[in-house]
Length: 360
Image (cartoon, rainbow, N blue to C red; front, side, top):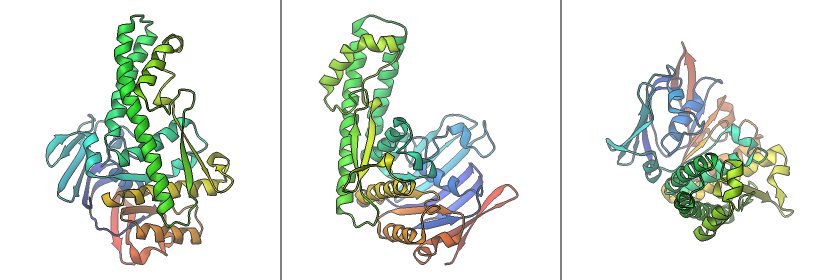
């Protein structure tokens, strides 16, 4: 799938914006606060979920909470629209018919890297789980449905635990749902890790390849068998009742990463190495999705790379079968890419963002 048009109305800093898109990388530059990242965020909203900032629908309106916003895009023969009116919930239409966020994953594969992810290897497991699930969702759109089913059942089970409900029949029904959905979640995650490993092994890259592993954490979270998941949930029911929440299952998983001949853990690597490992994984994700022509969003990706590493990165981006969008504070950050990319300057004028395409 290929994005050809993007149109924003009252989204973040953008009163309105129209962009015609093609297969070339787009380098978007301008001062901090000019609205560059908001363009990337709008593109991330063409995928299931809350986008690259994880913001609520109400927080994405230009005029503030209670206002509406709209994003429209053309993807091959499909028209996508998403937005929220008057502070309401986010809605999605596909080819002018009401649809769901989950359906967006079948139309467009969107992956991203933002500065906040630089702390991925040193933060709590929750951030690494979200990262892994975003990778997984890019390969397996149905992962979203299984995750929603698991979360719904777990919330109900947690409510019973907190209320000290003793009836085992209620638990068995919910634990069966958790086991089926949880097994699917784990299988999807393992499949995604395998696809990333293959893409790194087969790809020509100057960035260090990271070996990913699904870690069980404290909750046996790497188990892909529904029967054993259900048995464990039943066995630990009393313990979970004491905690008031479910302590076993894929919601407790962690993502491990190591690299190099010494199998250095990512968490113990230097800041520069951790950044390079993330770039390697995102590029591998894009290569593995080449047949889908994914949308690759790289926010301020060049800020902490030296000139040689920037050139290496841009060579790999230019060779990808992907639509890439990059942001930076100035055109000089894209010197080694500019003749292969569309250069768009963003300015902030009278509290309204404006975009102008520049000829390299």
